[in-house]
Amino acid sequence: MLVGFPYHPNSRSRAIRTLASPSRAQIGDLNIPIGEMKFPIGEMVGSEKHSEIERIVGRGNRRDVLHIDSAYRNRCACFFTRDPSDILAKRTELEALLRLRFFHPDDDWDRFVDFLKATEGA
Image 1 (cartoon, rainbow, N blue to C red):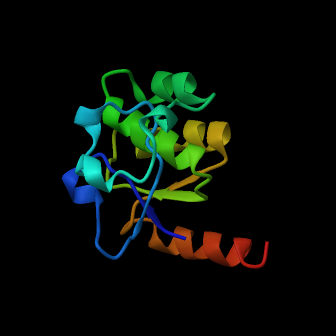
Image 2: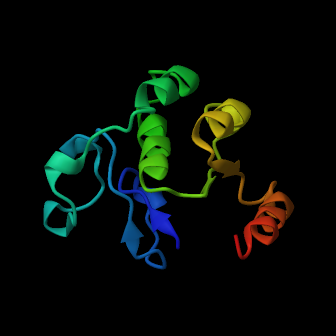
Image 3: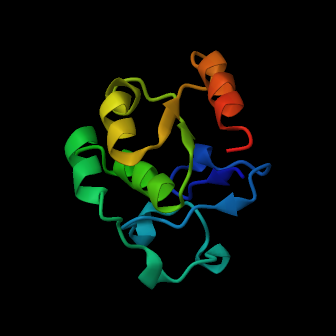
């Protein structure tokens, strides 16, 4: 299943109908009208890995941390991003911590297809 993240305007696609539950988000972080929130504000909490994600990605990259922690909390198997310096450059450490695979949608397409084939039927 594909999930979108409610943080950035360009991270929402009409083709992706399910939103991940936000992690430690504040109302100002969300790019959705309050009436479209399908989750209680009280559920916007960080995972037990939030602090470690923040240490790896950097405290100054708050929205990246929120995206990654939301993916982890929502049990995503992989994460697509075009962010080369804050996320992809640190993917080895993030993947080891979270058991979540990180891919660039263009540069890593073949790796992603191999990942799908390896997990098919698992």
